[in-house]
Length: 55
Image (tube, rainbow, N blue to C red; front, side, top):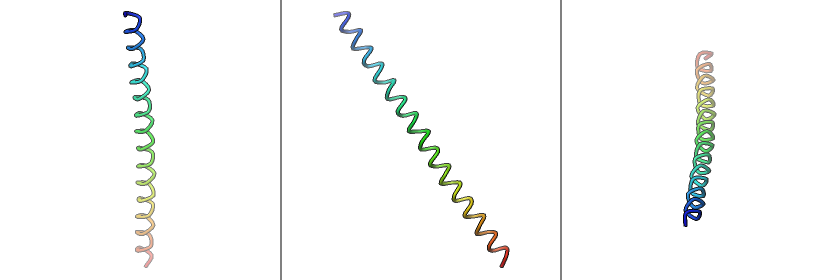
């Protein structure tokens, strides 16, 4: 019973560790996408301002 409990605990720990890694990678990917979207918005705003200054 002790060995079975140890293997069950190990499986749960490995599973939660794997989920933590997946969540971390997903958060980094979401942050990257958000920064790319914000960067393109800033570039578009600067381009609009330059166009309005030239007119």
